[in-house]
Image (cartoon, rainbow, N blue to C red):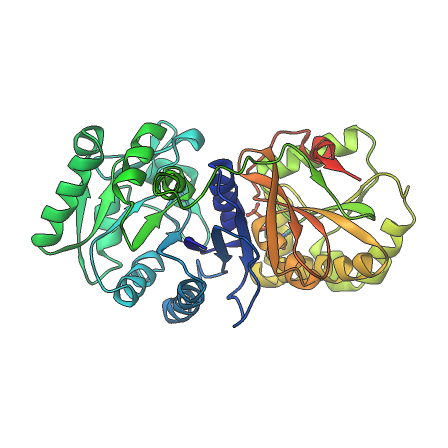
Length: 422
Ligand code: ADP
């Protein structure tokens, strides 16, 4: 194992794993901090998925350090700390505090921070993060319930989160190539900087940064920053090129779609699936709270559907309905009721012979995968940018597609299955 990554949420980890696998690395994703002696098979890159984005900074540090130690023990030469391409964080953390702790663990040195992901419309210029054509602070991220991003100047944002001095690695230096980047980083380190926000507006910039960082012990960024890293190991003769499979053999068993994401893309996919005639059961937090919907009843409904096609269970709803249940139950309870129910349904279905799960929603995926007990996932074919099929390693043997809310076309719930073989 050569490259160890720590992601601050589950679907972000899957996104990163897919990026590494697309660039030819044998990649395994691990859910939670790996236990001592865990078997990583022939993985060249290992991505540990944490749930540390919005927890207390101290807890995020402890978890991330435990993950880093496990990755180093498994042979990682380089640690990549992956966060969201919209730099989701608050002044209390957790990007800065976790990066500081990892830096200390890895013996200091300068680390870059680059959330850019031009293919998804995230670019960094003069240290400012743009979402499409707008500054981060003008994008919908300004109203995020947990991590509102109201300052697009990432040098300033990160400076508020770290005890080290933050500098800027500007685009003109990146455009001058890997050697110029290395010189600029060395200069910045000499003048006392601990972290540098790196500009990148195109994939070519990310590849330059990747090449320049061949010897870096710690790199931080979005999944885009991983684009150029596999080539470093390839140039050193450490890895070959493992192609991303076009298809995946799935374990025998029935299929189901579970959607707890209320994002616009997911709601479009729910509508698309229903319009195409997929049997669908709608859940609401209020019904769950009232006891009129429970895991046994929902699982029974799924089991009664056509065994040869997936059925859909969804709680996805429009913002007004979501607000209604949240105002009656509280934001956390409304979410937890859905997550717990979908987790419990997953267990019943797994025990009834279901082996193929398509899950929509980051938090929802976390709840379902935890309930199913899958720990290590091998990355399979790409369904849509950012979302691969995965197959769990060991027991239980499952095919899992974990979709972040905003990913995928309206026919995602229908077309994803085409990449699976019996
Ligand atoms: P996304 O990836 O789109 O952000 P998540 O699964 O991460 O999706 O988050 C959606 C959250 O909303 C989950 O906690 C989920 O349980 C909760 N939720 C799902 N449906 C509803 C609903 N109808 N009302 C309120 N909360 C809901």
